[in-house]
Image (tube, one colour):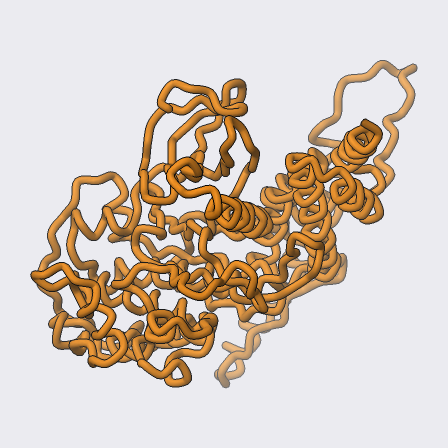
Length: 523
């Protein structure tokens, strides 16, 4: 496949190949964009199995194309070519958590915690996500079912992204979850998943707990035996108590070990019930640890990979949610490196009669009081003069600083129709508005939400939240319409593009998509 062109993408390398498909690195033939192209190997399966595989692959494209979270890999395109299905995804330039653990071994608690929080933020979003199915119905809640270090990707700045939604379970799904189909990876599967029972979000939290355990201990709670049999691993998850993390990792804070161990309870009702609850427990631990004595740890092996130093030093503040109903995580004391500085404010002009209050003086002898009184009066006079001068400068300063030489016959300068804003516009807000104007709605949504996170008390907050909600609906309708066009389902595409136009009449993408859909129906 290397060197071949599939659709608009030239295959440049192979990243992985398994029993069900292959994953390639590729680049767009005209745009400066690197991507990941995933395919299924239909020819490796009997004809009766190919249709279910196609349906599941299409499900992955449908689900992941609707997800829009900074800690989840984005789907860019889905198409069929050469009798195969291809899924085009965002390329994360870095390594998987599995690769990092192989290189470094266990992580220190301060290295692992930022990754814990990002992965829980991604799962909380997915578990509460409102999505559209193939028939246009609306549902809430997506269970990943294959959480493991290999599906957690890290870029060079220690930003984590969850990927591989190929075996997700949607709320109420039955058709694609057949008897005998038990997806997942044995080392990370929950007891109920191994038994083939119904799973929910708490199963993902168990798998994530196994991953956290491995990150902190440098080993799995139930590793492979010498025989290599998966039976012992599965038996461990169902029947055995994992070795206490505090014993497996000397020096780890006991409170952190207890939080992770709770996620490994056999009974799902005894675990953290939601990703948000799990995340809040970690944040509470961090707040307590900020004033607690630090635990002395043995030195950790160093890694020369470019991302290791950011991992060790990162105080990464995850974007807690794009959904307004989710709890917002408290921010750490140190400012996150990926957040732009807060907008700067110009000082407001004081009124002409402004004067600072005289400080309260202790009782002094009469001569000293008279001297202090005279000094206070002098200060008040100087403050009043200064305030008046400042006010006068604010009224006339801009004209005086930008004045140009004019002839006596030149007409007077026209005053601006409105006074300049006292707040310099935040760069995130400016970029978000520019992205919205270009119909790059995902970028616009992220920009608005970053601005709101940094400025929760802004007078524009309510209007911006409404705008974000509208843009999310619009982005979703456009994505569904474009997916319908790729599948040649012109009727569904027309319906979605028409719905997008109701949300935004001037949308060029919706207008063009509707015309193409109507043309497809007319063929």
